[in-house]
Image (spheres, chains in turn orange, blue):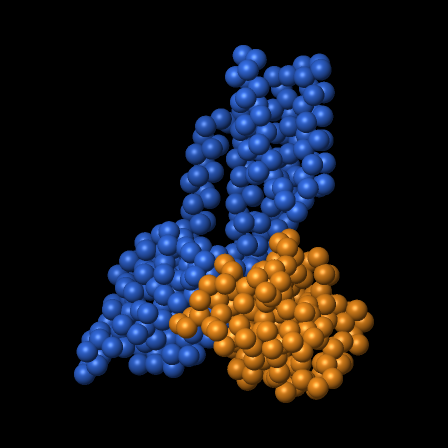
Length: 157
Length: 255
């Protein structure tokens, strides 16, 4: 079944990911791509705590994720891949890649960002980054949980 | 670097009291952030005493405390205590931020399982059983008291555990008692609610006879069917409130 959701969310793994998406998709593994978390044992422990034991959590650096992307795509189980920022996810869409859709699930307030949706705050640079991603043929939509309709890129950038 | 424990208690009590208002400034931009910052401030006050820095460290720490945050309202004190302790221990600012971010997920899901899907429905079910067995008002008052003893104890434990462990707060979440409580809360809730349902049904239908009892059964079955069919939009609370509105209207039209 492979990776059913490529998600950008600065909270990384939390309830919306594990319960909101994890339950209806029947997820068996979650890949967390973040260089800092990959290097930090205590952060990994905290993120693993929010996930039921039957779901496997894989921590990967951006580089490792690039290497293992096809392996995860061939996995017979269903998975979710989460990255904390646009850069990290965009880095996975270079050359020949299997990413056809990207879900913007939550990017929150930070100096320099303005509100686009209740759960999406972007700087102008980030908005154009998302448009570049879309221009490469990736379908980009915003959607926090599966019970709300996805918002097309034009409506929030 | 850790400060002496004698000063900790008044700060912790003040922080606990402020945590009761943590949802009051909830907004989409920072969610609980501002409330968290306000609650953390009493624990950061003695950073003002740092020599030759003119309160810069204190102000920066308070501002960091008010950044975006969201977790379960009863457990977010753990993040308040842990972040404040980390600030005192000289943990670099970006690490404090990462600690806060990493705590949102586990504290949210732990609180959901422990309270919203455990303690609250369990104590409500026990109160309903009490009412159905004829205990009346004392059962309701008992619920308010017992539920809040657990609630306030959880808030106090969370804040103290955060303050005790600081950046190593994962250790507090591994505590066997907490693990056991989390594992037990689901089954205990299911047992309580399962026992309450037939008793409450009997209690509520006690005043109805004949066709009225059949109509009640029909309404209940219809309610369940509607909840299942419209499960994306409808919740038990919304349906319950809608039924109350319909009943009030019907009672007003046909007194």
